[in-house]
Amino acid sequence: MTSPVPTARQRAEGQVAGSLVSLVFAAVFFLANSGRLGAASVPVQAAGLLAAAALAAAVLRFRRAALDAHPAGPGGPPGRNPFTGRGYLAVVGIEAAALFGGLFVLNSVLGLTGVNIAWIALVVGTHFYALGALWRLPVFHVLATAMTLLGLAGFAVHALGGPPAAVDLVSGIGSGLCLLGTVAATLAASWPRPRAARAQPPSRA
Image (cartoon, rainbow, N blue to C red; front, side, top):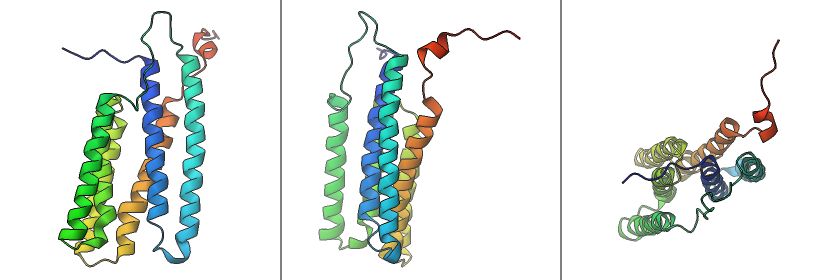
């Protein structure tokens, strides 16, 4: 049995939910991984938080524009909160188990305290594969691949003797930049035109 094709309104709601999740993760990555960057710590934190806040405002504007461009018709499918579905809750539950279970093994069993952010980037990146399928956002598969590679790169930096600051920069700040860039690119590519503009016939020369 095939799942129903989502409407433009449902796709927009999925994009909004995914963008907000991405921005929360981006802010956390910038806050948690810039402490070892010396004099650049505060500017990097400020730049990351300002970019996340500006994009969050743009996402909310996108949502209003999308709802105006694609109103729910009479008898249409009711809107659903993308954060309360069983699929989303299952993804979050598996992510949390992998995240905290892996950190326990790395820190308490293996004593590898310098690769925490690499593991976090790996798990968070992988979870975007599931969210991309759940919310019909193929761009999340690209984001997931990029973050997964950055997580693996952090492990490689540590294995080659790189300092913890280098792991933070590659897996942490790098992941934050990927998240911000994905949201910005998705908004630019999918911003809806007003209904009046779409209904206006093309002018003849």
